[in-house]
Length: 364
Image (cartoon, rainbow, N blue to C red):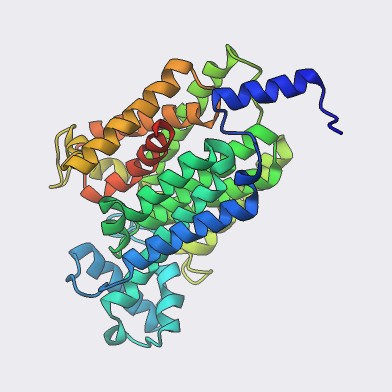
């Protein structure tokens, strides 16, 4: 016999009719079935990305990253240079993988061995959509996962030995953990979010731009939520202190290469001014509409962007106070930042594809 009151039952039905993503409405959304479905989608993405990884010659940036891994195989420690190199995360992930494939020196490395790192990172991102189903809805996340598994942009750049795939996975992890910390005052999720933020910075200095966008989005979403209901609250000072410690620990361990190069911490302080200098262009200047042009270059891209626009507008018009509301603000701020900064490279579009896929899934 049900113990729900008529009021509770009516509210649940109303939430379901409104399409609230943060509800558990029956067997299709059971965790075992959810993870089974997303595991299949991740395997599909993996199978699409694996074949002929070594056929395409390496891009210059890939070759630089490969050389760094070769130096690490030779016994050197990672030396962080904020002017010419990104953070240590890509190397830290690649090194054990190439060792497992019996690479012992730089000449043993192959394109396939190195690119396996980003292929796996892309597959992990697809799995993260399963973790996001409670926030954004089961079917929207399944559709978004399929878009990440099969669409040209994520496939192409997940097969690049560059930092972007790892960066997107860490960004997604931060969004998911941050929302759970906000919604449920979870200290554990707060610390997980801090670790993901540290991994973003350890991947690329552009993390600073995303931190600005995320903070601005959180403040705008908080003001937006004030008119609808009592907004959530982050965990208390003790949890915030623990999260800061986690962030610093991850940063120190990775940038000092597990304590072997403490000079990297002083170099890290130069990352923000160097990033701002690089944002001016340095030969990579593109017009503000560059990413819109890139994402709508063919008919399939135009369909996806049109659907994503519908999902975005649906969120804005409803003044949605769910996770979609925060995502809409974050998307608006990061698109604005990326559009206004003259420095643009095509793989940065992978950072926008995360939100595009989710809003497209919502529209469908």
